Amino acid sequence: MHYGKKLEYKGEEALKEIEKLTAKADEVQNNLLREILIRNGETEYLRKYLRGSKDVSDFKRCVPVSTYKNIYPYIQRIAISGEDSSLISGHPITEMLCSSGTSAGEPKLMPSIAEDLDRRTFLYNLIMPIMNQYICGLDEGKAMYFYFVKAEMSTPSGLPTRTVLTSYYKSKHFKCRTRDPYNDFTSPDPAILCNDSNQSMYCQLLAGLIHRHQVLRLGAVFASALLRAISFLERNWFQLCNDIRSGRLDLTITDPGCRSSTLSLLTSPNPTLADEIEEICSRPSWKGILCQLWPRAKYIEAVVTGSMAQYIPSLEYYSAGKLPLVGTMYASSECYFGVNLKPLSNPADVSFTLLPNMCYFEFLPLGGENGTLLSMEFNEEEEVPNDKLVDLGHVRVGHYYELVVTTFAGLNRYRIGDVLQVTGFYNRAPQFRFICRRNVVLSIDNDKTNEEDLHKSVTIAKNLLEPYSALLVEYTSYADTSTVPGHYVLYWEIQIVDSPALPLDHQKVLEECCIAVEEQLDYVYRRCRSHDKSVGPLEIRVVEPGTFETLMDLLVSQGGSINQYKTPRCIKSNNAALMLLDSHVKDSFFSPRDPKWIP
Image (cartoon, rainbow, N blue to C red; front, side, top):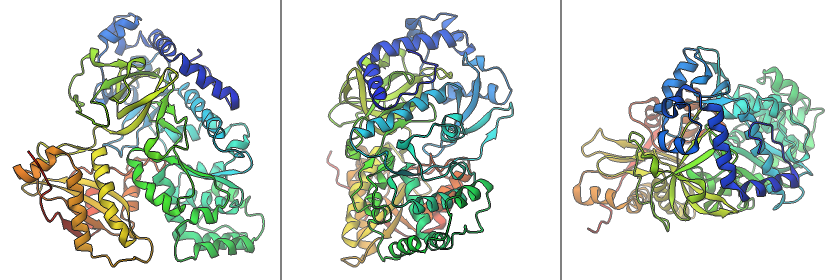
């Protein structure tokens, strides 16, 4: 197994490689860990624990489970002080990758080495061979995917700092890729690589509209980015039609790369196409508009698992439920992990198969079987005993784990923070359902609400809006302790999507939504509310339309990326995001009664 060489498998060869890797997952993992120890065993970090040993059993016995707090001093020494990469990695660290910083706080800097791009490319190259097993003819048209970069910076020592997706799009792996009919994008590369997200969005949408009869699939990295594109189209379709009708590009597009590459598509005026698009966009309802504008589209590709599941109703509305929602891969800034081998599965049933050549995987047991997450036994501040970790071949179906990885770039037994549930095995490789980020919680007293429980509760409650043709566009939460007792606050952005069958009595319906959320929260929360009275009634604050786009702009301006952006499901107190949300509140509603609780 060649771990450092460029791996480019396509077509049948890619599928055979998946079979080969998963059939010998244990062997691949053990060899990979040995290779990591040979390369990184002399680093300052590992020598502290192994004293030069390259033995796998010594690694498992002596190297502690780590969090960002443990690796941060080494990152600082490399990024700030300019010390050598050999502090943590046997290969030169070529860049620092910024996490999105929106799932659980401030962005983190993750070390990356040159060959990491080979591993990411290897995984990307598996996607279309997998898709081709389920949908035919994808080489007979184009893909309209909205990809974006974020302006990069440098550390004081001169290392580039950028998001993992910016790193990939700016690499030779993307820019110098060979022509592939299965990956023929509508967006010109210069539009993708434009640092101005508004100009990039405009030109990518314009390109997608020009090629509307050739588009076979739609997508973005996250579902939220695709919905942002739809919102942008709602505001700008008239001007986009003018550009197509006149054959001239709007003068607000000033970026040279965007302008020249987009002008090459506007070869002549096309009033017929402009009229077609204008007629569709002028319709009073945008239900199904994706299918109307791009009639040959076969599916939507975006992350729709975890907190992104919130966007499924909106995507189904804009596609009239006619386009499958496909999540193809599981990845993070720290490492790319695996692929979805059944991409047409319902989003709620999606499982990802971990690829054993990506990194060395270990798993921290968290809970029980049969859909019950019993505990989050170890928080980030607690030391985890080494003997608690389970390797890839010994996880149990139905059980919950936190993902722990060891990488060539210098992360050792690093806790990713993702909670996963084992759903089965593909050959000898485990398959997991993504549950939530374990460190996103609301807590006032003894209650602790994680992201999954919050999402489930909101999903139940928002059904109460449906009879009124109202759609919950977006939400986040906040533990308000400014009152005694403190209480949970949900910020909801609601959109009326069609003429309502029933008039919406906001107070009655939203109060019922409040109690519906509380009834679905766990035993401890309901005890705190109903018996201990240590938590006050839940509050829903309804915000003005567009509030969450403004929130996204704020968080992206603070160092996030449109590609990687995920609405934070919990807002910390005393920060700009909370102030922004509160400044856009139209009305607020409280639970009218205590949730049911039986001792």
